[in-house]
Amino acid sequence: MGRRFAELAFTPLVKEQQQQHGSRHLYERVEQSLDLGDRLGASEQVFVCERDGFYMASVTETGWPYVQYRGGPVGFLRVLDERTIGFADLRGNKQYISTANLLHDDRVALFLMDYPNQSRLKILGRAEVHEGDSEAQKLIETLRIPEEKSPVERALVIHVEAFDWNCPQHITPRYSERELAKILEPMRRRLAELESENKQLRSATQKVNARINP
Image (tube, rainbow, N blue to C red; front, side, top):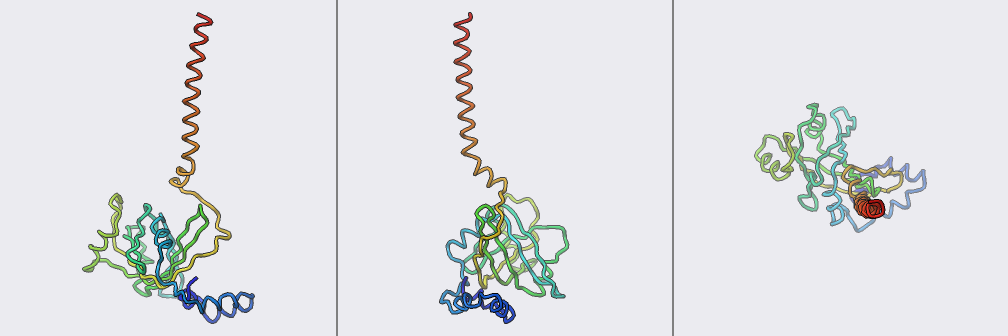
């Protein structure tokens, strides 16, 4: 965890809870860290680009938190630079809750999950909604996935304020079809080899039987 994440997340009440539960001394050191933690490094950038989905929290006008899932092909979430990520926002159920929330309060919290490896990256940032403005079409063309058939309604650009790698504890491993295919590929190859060997053995056995029992 970098210092900037602690500055944003550790409010006075959070610090009181840390003190009460005995973890305050650990996080005081984080607040004094020389690592600001507001720029995505190489490992964070790779992690972002390998995701096929993430969770985004925003805040409604009445103060309620709202979480929405955004998904797509691997690589749909783009790293524009070390402090900026973005994606082409596809047409959904037309509730527009997140879109409206961001016009009211541009702060977002992202959870990026890697379930097979039990990894989780949290990002705090501020979102720009580009729809119908001079930058929108240019950004959409930059961010869209060529093979995606669903209509793109807007471009969302998120300016990273801070990030934190979360503890892997309690993350239950889960696997997508693509991830399972990669894991099972050696087994599929071995099965194919065994089937080929069995076919050859059956053929050889048939030839032997034909000679013995003409």
